[in-house]
Image 1 (cartoon, rainbow, N blue to C red):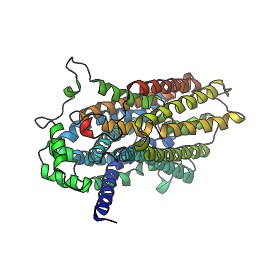
Image 2 (cartoon, one colour; image 1 turned 60 degrees about the vertical axis):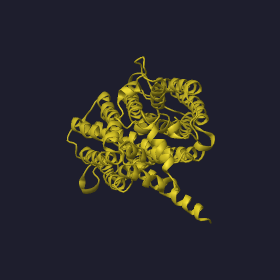
Image 3 (cartoon, rainbow, N blue to C red; image 1 turned 30 degrees about the vertical axis):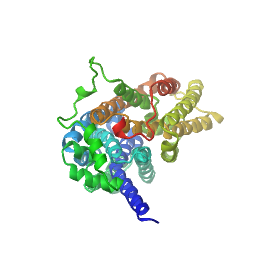
Image 4 (cartoon, rainbow, N blue to C red; image 1 turned 180 degrees about the vertical axis):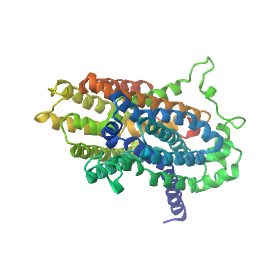
Length: 466
């Protein structure tokens, strides 16, 4: 093995290491949003809440995420990407402790809102940092690390919910030291939250941030570890694209005529459609969903864990192919698959007979088909819209507007997530599962045309050329 090959391998390992540390924010983002899944019904029972308040308890954290995402770009541009990660880590830790100690539904919502701000911050910082520290030939795969971390976080949260609920006998039964099981579900987020902060303190600042701050020797040092060789040319390239006279402002997102730049609208469209296809209904409410069609609590949690595992496998597929096939083909395939599978679920739930409580009962093969379609839907989302949206959001904006544009697009994603999550319990109660899945099917069909007409391929392009 030649010295240059050894050096290139060392550079690649280094980039994977720092991208992995940044993606820990994604792990906590996934963990924190999904951990509520196993606790939803126990929470409603403990605090005696209506379906609307239960929906708010799950989804108000998402409004906190929208706030965190909106301001994360400004914090990251002013104080650096690493400091923003440390702030997110502290908020994650406080939120996890507070949620488990909650005395009533409203202080529970407050702690979840705090966690939401951390999730929103992490959702913007990780893709921006990874895109800015990755060589162009690896950027798609490393950008997908964020989504891989999110789905592993979701899976671990669902798995810990399952073990805690099964060990205690139920989510509302006493667990360790006589403390109710659902409280322990939230406390399991404390160790990874602390670890995220520690990991953030060991990684270098983004070279693009350092150049923007006039700290070019530090930027050169980081780029040498990432790219190897002479990085003077790269520094010059970054210097030309980063506007050094002032910090990026949201006014940079406006065109000369005063409207929002088309590329920002495309980022918002991507973000909103990623949520409107209903993926988070599966991850926030799947235990409620499967219990609504007749499965026991244990079986519902088992199905949810399997779904989380499917999500991890498909994200690994995306990582393998995103730099080979490109972003657009994966999105097109995913949209077609989601439209078919969601349509199947809408038809099954819409035509199923209902029991005395108004819940659909899946008899014969209908239950098997629904389970298969739900997991196939997660598969289609997992190799396409899940990871590819984050890859595109990290790389589609030029250096001048990246921080601000990512903040706006990610905020809209959280608001869309909030709308979907809050409306699901009342839609389930008043209109039934068939109507809910009918809406998500429509969004999946729209997503196909959106990709065909508006998304441009970014595979292999340098960030400075966007």
